[in-house]
Image (cartoon, rainbow, N blue to C red; front, side, top):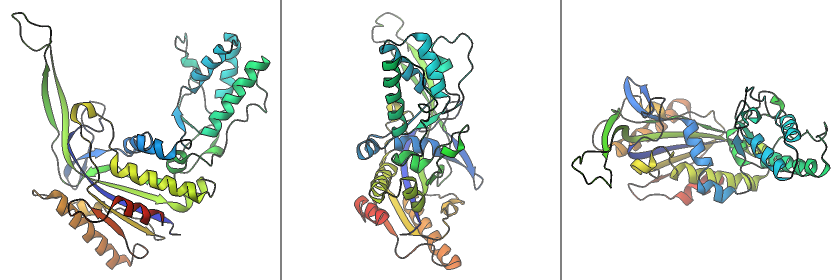
Length: 351
């Protein structure tokens, strides 16, 4: 079994604002002295792991990432007629197993039951917490030290196995990510543009027929290069050496990465797109991105075709200089030419 799987994708997005910065404009990066659109790895990973495709294929094997688990459990205790004072005390002792609680004065919406940092709860941990809630509700007694041993070194949740988790207070239960995802960038330079828009009041029939609302929205368009590196040995280890589950996880990831865009401003732009080109490599060699193919921004009207050509030139040149950077044949599909298939890509990745 090859240790590493690398995926290189080219995706063409129309005008969009898939991933915004703090001012509401599309994220960018300067690469090769050219301004590029950028989609953060965090945005990509969240879009994939929360997608309907991922949920359908990995149902029962997906954790939940939240600060607010304590509030949910608190409400469950109240439903079971546990006194409010007891419920709060018990919840705090439970949540402190996962992280430090917020210190809030005069908390109005139970913010004092929030954990300071996002915690990725595994399905097994969620089950253990809910069983403890049932036990406490029935007994009316606070949790014991044994009851509070809720953390697990999960072996069933593919999102945690792929993208990892960090528990600052209890690092023994951290999970090292088996899938690395680069920030996606356009293979050509771009200019972020502004869309001036107005909205009309449907009931405005008077003399003042002007706009009821005026605003601006930023957008950009381009062909993006996406890169993923999968440590298959680590992924299988993270999943308790369950190869069948690992194969299902890889299938779900390939489906999501090639089909699912981030959700930002989709209602305004409907900027949904599938990967137009995908190249997969397997091997035990040290992985490397092919982003260097686009240090010099692509120009012209055939951006996608030229991007594919530059990508494959970079692969060939790496092999010439460093020796074969993959074990045996690679696999690619090309939508422009109707070559290869998603099923073929998945079979190659899993095989």
